[in-house]
Image (cartoon, rainbow, N blue to C red; front, side, top):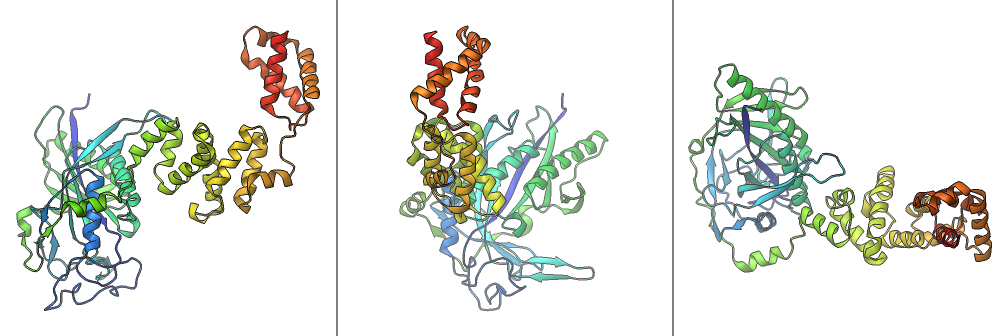
Length: 486
């Protein structure tokens, strides 16, 4: 039995998708030449004053609504004072004691016993979400460090969880779910390689069953979700080793290297009073009324796990299909449009074509769904043809590939390529079925004795005789009728 348990809280910084920066009209963006997205406000030149970006406020309120937060009726802005080259003002405009979003939670799914089985769900509670300005980026060379202020002033949300996570796997699930909500909500692109989503982890250990919190260590520079998971698990093992060897955990900030799997101490951890927070005198408090919240609530999409539960209940879809669809809004919308045309009873067939064949062809072509010629109507029509016996499974797969490439409807392709199952004269089909029964006494006897799968030994000869183009449903019905007649 484990002697220690970990207690983990995450601080996730998410850049708001906005055209301009939080307190000025200068453009926000990524990949531009160094220090070109700046102006007097960003550079904190004397006499400049901040002006609030309403798009940033809309984004954080919407994020709070999606995550079930209480939206504060009034929030204010504070100066977080520190001296570092990435902040030309020597302070950061943030929110301290009156954040705009309070409480809330992120639903996560832990891995199941296999990829085909749903895992345990739990909600990780949030402490707060507040809005602040991002800082510049230091580029370190062999002999010097250069600062790029393009990122400085970009609107940034900090999403702070309660210390309620227990291991790296839970952190991985938390960040995966949070990123999906932010992307699907249109709040952020959350590209960690571009710094649009960044995570710091606060980790401590304590004896199993204890209620007090241990000394926490902050882990930084976790620039992928996998590195967050691996870094947390590494730090838990490190802290346990320190304690078991008689050492003491020191409150500090550590740097984790995802490539080597090692960490090193960066600095002692600052406390809140070290930043000397005080209200920003240049920015007025913001009042959020019910009309503002109602407008943004109307824009909120269904959360991924809510949509998954609905798909399973309303369409009878298995977990294997829903667990692919709901993490991509466009794909899930495409599925629902196809089902609307094909009919709910055909929903599982529609889902199978989408998650297997459509995703395979998109990947092979290097296309997004929006770039594809395939529309929901194509999938609905193909499913209908297969169900009616107009296309056999192998022929349907050929038609799908051609349909994806050309954008033609499946009936047109099947007719041109001679892939449609041929209508069979009823008398001729019945004779072939009688011949198959007569030539396969064993299979016929087993079926009559109650072995339903034995009928497949009779279908094969009939389909072969009719060159694979007979309606398999009609063959099955005819065989069963003749066998029942004796």
